[in-house]
Length: 191
Image 1 (tube, rainbow, N blue to C red):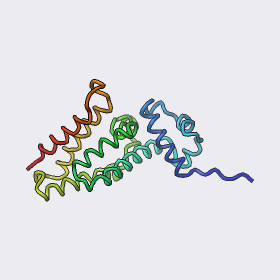
Image 2 (tube, one colour):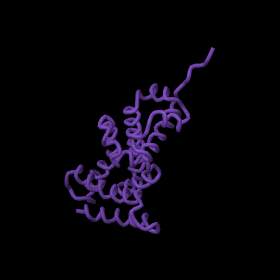
Image 3 (cartoon, rainbow, N blue to C red):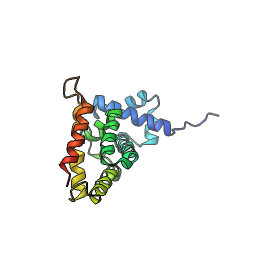
Image 4 (cartoon, rainbow, N blue to C red):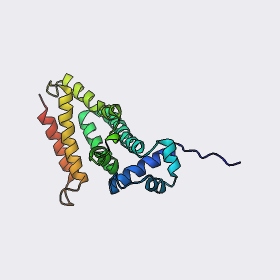
């Protein structure tokens, strides 16, 4: 008697990682479930069993990106805004395909593949909380915390996106530029 095929958490995670890499490299329209299954050393049956189909797999990959990004932000939150900014860059550099999948617009043609709103917004909660705490301590202007958080996010996101796109000379001191930008952001929102 044959043992049933088990599609476990390892297979699921491998499929999510491979999906992000393939979509980043080929674009969502060119990636097939067969491509994903072959690259993950499994079958299309595993994809259908675990996710349902291509749209659900793409959504799960984006959600997984926001989930792991959110975890990294929660781990850094005790260090305040500066630690969150540094963790943002570290996570993006360690997960460039996921970062581009989440923020690069590759899925724009796949309307049904938008991130799950709660998963995406939950990943930014540590930033909003850190802004609120810094405002309460008098280190940031007392403006709408969401507006301040979005302004800060836009600054760090833009710089990380430029670094990932390799938008400058290869010898560019991205860590130094990033640290200078974090200091600038702090000054810009100071009371």
